[in-house]
View 1: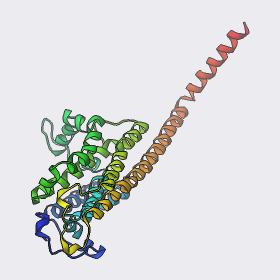
View 2 (view 1 turned 180 degrees about the horizontal axis):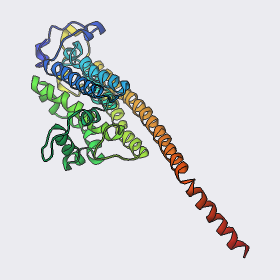
View 3 (view 1 turned 135 degrees about the horizontal axis):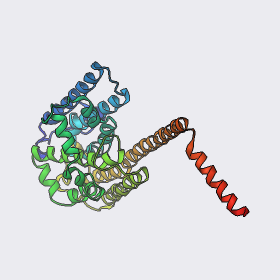
View 4 (view 1 turned 90 degrees about the vertical axis):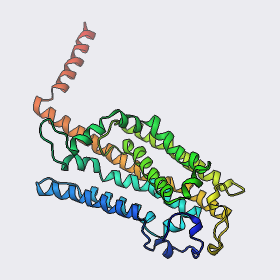
Amino acid sequence: MDHSGHGTMMDLPPFTLGRGLAFSPDTFFLVGCLLALALYGWGVVRLRRRGDAWPVGRTVFFTIGVLTVALVMCTGLNDYGMVMFSVHMVQHMVISMLSPILLLLGAPVTLALRALPVAGRGAKGPRELLLMLLHSRYMRVITHPAFTIPMFIASLYALYFTPLFDFLMGSTTGHIAMMVHFLAVGLVFFWPIMGVDPGPHRPGYVMRMLELFAGMPFHAFFGIALMMASEPMVGTYAHPPASLGIDALADQNAAGGIAWAFSEIPSVVVLVALLYQWYHSEQRAAKRSDRAADRDGDKELEAYNAYLASLQARGSR
């Protein structure tokens, strides 16, 4: 079905789950999803052929992440999202919050660094170019919380509460660019928070949690603003096709409820992932400490005991 604008979809029947999940591919995202799966699969196969292991869980997470993108962009949800604010908001929340988290849990950058061949001396191959990008000033800027948090927030308020949204929804190119932007902003926002792949910024676990909770409340405020509005706030959805049998304001209220409630889902997923990483980090640190104690006969403990003995000796003088 044509995704060039809501004016071409006046014949859509009332929304049902079956119609929303029917296969209706957007060529750009279909090709992108297939390419992402193919490249990831190539990396995994390359590692295994040379005898290196790659966690199955990471492959599962990445695959599900790609499928969530396909779910909202290559089905009837993408068609109905052009004329129903509530369905569009499902697309936005999934592709900007759920999909990035799942993709990042798949550690695609780590896989690329391990799978890509090392170029010869003095040469720059794909792996070397990727490393240069990861260590570039550009990446340090766009992954810094001072950039990611405002950008994450602006993707809501500066888009929906200005004419920019209506402009982008008026063409296929604009709609694709907007959805790619949502996905990119989500990836950049959650990348340093998840900490699975290497990156310019690797804050501690407490700081990552603070970064997470700094951005999430604004989704709730945005949703509440939509639900409390007494008139449609977005021109694209102000006059839905009569064939849908919906009220624009009621649909906007539903969109606000989705934006308000959906932010809890990624927050919980990321929080669980962070706690899991933190626990295993502490376990690894404890094992390293135990191995060091086995090697040097626990010199740190002996030094501490000697220090206590010296204090006791001073006190007895």
